[in-house]
Length: 216
Image (cartoon, rainbow, N blue to C red; front, side):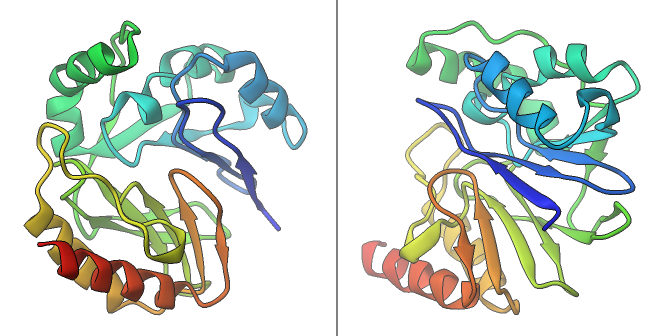
């Protein structure tokens, strides 16, 4: 298995390390457990082997750790995020900083992603799916061949879905995003928080869609 979970600690998001031709990190956590994250990475590869970091959205618990991690991985590591996340990163991070009580350092996004972009990392080819609702810049990464979905905070296991009461959240946008995901053939879900779904991922997405429809 080339996908390795680094479980979130405290307020951290989950972090995923994909080892391969273009070793990739998905999300970076809050950054308060930096040493732990680096040691977990070293269990599989040297940090300098990470070629890119993809942020699933602009909230601080997913992106604040990026600055220190890039200091570990080196200046050749590129940072990717949806263009809406890039545009809102400082504003949203400042608001979220008030919630979490930590300062958000400035981070530079090297590549702005759009819905439908394709990211080929060798063993996986990901389609970028823009999934607003939890935040304007939320994305999921879908590998159609291997039926994998990195879902950020859009959808979780057992019918869970992202909060929409943060600034920029929109329950009706989230509904459309879940409808989009429910049309995919998904086996495994790698969410931004909580446990992974290994097998029958589509059923968890459809349950999340059903649950949200009951609320709005």
